[in-house]
Length: 497
Image (tube, rainbow, N blue to C red; front, top):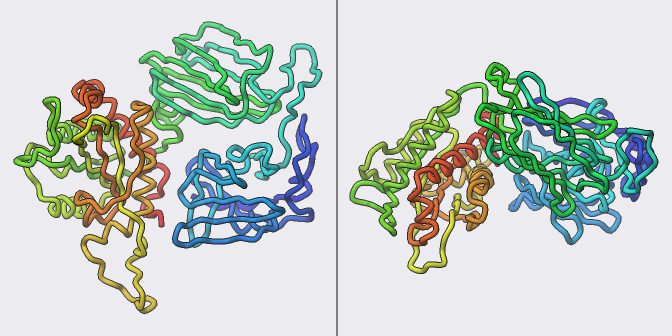
C-alpha cells in the first residue's frame, strides 16, 4: 500500500473532447484549477481521498459515524457511500460496483471505480480513468456510430469484435469495444470462466474470429441486457490467466497459459477468486468444525451436522494449504466434543487472521433451504478497544468475554460478504443472505469471525447436494476462495474498523 500524488486539472475534467469520440457530460463539477490529490493503492484498485471528492463536487456532506455512511449533496443530486459496501446510491437509485469505500489512516477513501464503472453514464459523474498521468477525465464514448477507416472497428458503446489467437504456450482472446467497457470477472473457475463487460453489449455487425485456440475448449458471447457476457470452458492443462487493458481503441486481452513456470513466477493468476493476490508471508486461519462427540448437531436425510462440518473443515484446510501460503488450524480433528469457550481459547491462542465456524442447519418446515453466513453485530466497541460512556480519553476498558467479537464486527461483516460471493459461484440460488447475531460459536473470538450454515439438512435438495462428495469438495473450494480473497484485500495487521 502506497500513496502517490497526481494532478487533476479541472479543465480536463470538463473537457468534452478529452478523448476520441467523447461527448459532453453535464457539468456537475466546478471549473478552475485543481490542487493535487492523493491516491491510495490497495491490491489492484485505486482510491481517492473523500475530502478531495467533496472539494471537486463543491458538495455539502453528512457523515453518519454509527453506520459509517457519507452523503454528498450538490446541484440537486445525492451521492451516498458506505464503508465496506460496494452499493452506491445516486439520487433514488442504487448501483453495485467492484470496490467498496475504505477507512484507512483516519480518512475515508472512495474507489476510483465509483466514477469509472459503478455510476451510470446518465449520472454525469461517469468518467474515464487515465492511468498514465493518473487523472480522471470527464466524457464517455459516443453512443452514435461514426464513419471509420477501412478495416477499422466501428465506433459504438459496445463489443465490436473478438479475435482468438494461438501461441506456443498460450491462447489469447482479444476483445475490441467502441467505447469504455468496465470489466467484471463473474467466475474464474477453469470449467466456467465468465467475464462481464458493463454497458458494452455486442453492437450490430459484431463478429467472432473463431481461429482455433487449444486452451479455449468453448467460447460463447451473449448480450446480458446492457452488458456483454463472455463464457469459456478451459482444459485441465490451463493453469492460469492474465488480463491486459489496452486503449485507442478500447481493447481487453485475456490470455490463458499452460506454463507452470509463468504461474509460479507470478506472471499469471491461478484460476480462483478474481483479483486474489496472496500475502507475502503465510497467513494463519482457524477453521472450527461445529459440534462433535455426543453433540451431533442437526440431522436429516441420514446426514449429521457434526460429521459434515468436520469433512468440510478438512477439505477447506487441504485446499487452503495447497500453495503453502496459508496455515490452517482446526479446533477439532476428530469426532470429539469441544466446549465453545475452549474453541475460542484455542483460536485466540493461534493469533489467526480469521476464524470460520462451519455448521449446517435444520428446520421443522421444508421451505427453509440454502446457506447462510452470520457475523457479530456492530456495537459501540471499536477495533482499537472498548468505548463506553464516561470512559477517560486514553483509558483502557476491560471488555466482557461475550463482547470481544464486537471489536472486529466490521471486518467480520466484510469476510461474510467475501464468503457469500464465493459460495454463490457454486450455489447460485442458495444464499439466504447475511445475518447478524451474538451466537455461541462466535463468542470470545478476538479476530474477524464468521459462522456459515452450509445448507439445511432437513431440506431434501440441500441434503442431496451435501451427500454428494464432489459437491462437498466444490463447497470447500468456494469457502477457501472466499478466505483467500479476504486475506488478499485486508492488509496484514490492519483490521477494518
